[in-house]
Length: 114
Image (cartoon, rainbow, N blue to C red; front, top):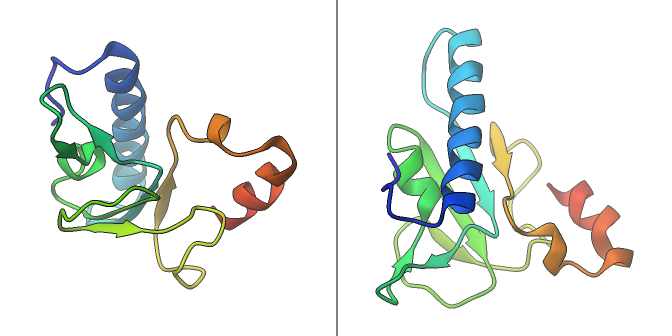
C-alpha cells in the first residue's frame, strides 16, 4: 500500500490503478498479475529513488520502466516509445503522469507501444 504522505495527485492515480487491478483480479478469480508501469520512477521527498507501483502491487510481479538511472530491483531504464519486452509479456500496463512528457507527434506511437 502507498504511504499517505505522498502528493495527493500521485496517491490518487495509483489508488485508481490499484482499484482497477483489484477489479480485474476479482474477474479472474484471484491470482497474480505481471504489471508494467511505464514512466513510474519517482524521487521521494527525501531525494531517494522510489517505485510506487512496486509498493502498490506487492503481491504481483511489477516492473517499472523509465528513462532516469536507478539501481532499484524491478526497474528497467529504457525509453517508453521502444519498450524492450515482447507483446503479451504483461497482463496490465500502467502509465501515470507520462503522456505530457511525450511530444504530441510521438504520442500515437507511444500509446501503441503500451
